[in-house]
Image 1 (cartoon, rainbow, N blue to C red):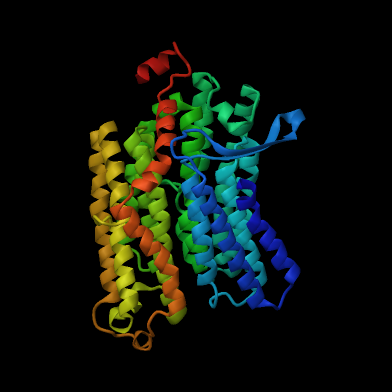
Image 2 (spheres, rainbow, N blue to C red; image 1 turned 120 degrees about the vertical axis):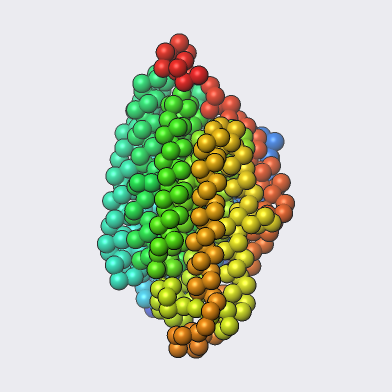
Length: 496
């Protein structure tokens, strides 16, 4: 099942290639069909998943390169499953959103998107370190093309900046992967979670991982590639970038840094807290000053991901569950916000906030949907954003009261810039002739938001199924994070 959900989109990309050029509608329908089939397979995986088991399920393992100890190993647990489901949900929405806005090289665009889905799902399923790394790097290529070919006027600059930042971090990760694998004598991720490493080795390996994952999250101050990438990317590219790709960095912390290098994770937790608090407050203030709608949402993503990293490094059940749930919530809400920007950009061909105003008078249904996701982003009780933020702040409070206090100020600033943006875009008098010519959101566009709206309220009012899915695996992760792997080391004793 895991191999099927991983490689079905790649097979679909090959089919679209065989269909050939100049058959744009065929390529669109083929891509949509394949992405929906992938969603069905992911739901079957969820249906067969046992929430009471903490370890990996549905494991597939075949020897790959026995001389190097490498294997093709796939598995899923309560931490990776939500991201597989989220990827499988957002991809068909991205393809639908591009139905009319992408008119050049349609075949190549659909192929790139399906290949991206395949590599990303593979990252979340991989149980071999080298397989994980190969898929992690492969994901860069279709995303680079999506930004660089179908992006805005400065698309080449943004694509190169995205590629160089993430590749630079990945080189350090490769060194750490090789060092850990060779030292432990295996590249199997479940086996590495039980391996013993010296304290100094953990420190250096953690730093190498930290740089790679921090760029991907992105954490302050290595976040500067993200606003450029978002502004220049097509709507679908921004949705998948904010919805899925940013989660891969935080997923790396959960899968590798915390369980494999727990002593170093505890030692560096104060540093992560500090950088996260700066990201929450600083980028929220920067968002307040933005004139471009996409750039404002991009900076808000950096701020929201700061909450996630605080939750993860609280290293307790509440913080980790909140962090993982908030990653899913952010994927839903930020994806929806970028789709909303895409709807209005397709009509007005501008993202400048000053040129909007009064849109609610012309597009009332659009305004209601925009309001819903704005409230979810702010963390209004009853929406999914509230549940995630509440658990993160609770976990942070248990770990460090001051971190929770400073993080809470970010909630207030976040409400300020989101409500300011909402007021500027949707209310007031209409001064722009282009706004007067706007037509209401279409049925196809409404379909994009229906599943996301359902999830906003489902998680907001009844988060139990989502928390139960991850609870056993998170409990196991908390236990792993508290293990002292280098007993007797003075530095570790000092941490305690």
